[in-house]
Length: 100
Figure (cartoon, rainbow, N blue to C red):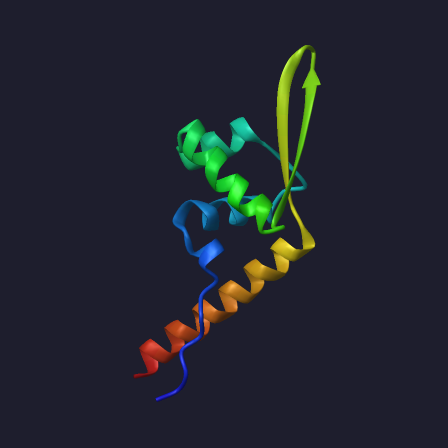
């Protein structure tokens, strides 16, 4: 039996995977846009983005626009690489499952 690939536990969470998948397609994204796209609560979204930030997968920029706070997130090169590796591992895992 071939060795099964290990899936990155930081990315494997449903919301974290969704966030990275959204961020890979845009230059940057506002917190409120990510919240709307994922349907997440502020607290859960903030916690999951913090985990991605701590892993070095996203960067955060906080600023004010017309006196209103704005929080922007960008995927890092490390995050892009980690997502690519995750997808490759998942494809390998699914290929193993389907081929069995």
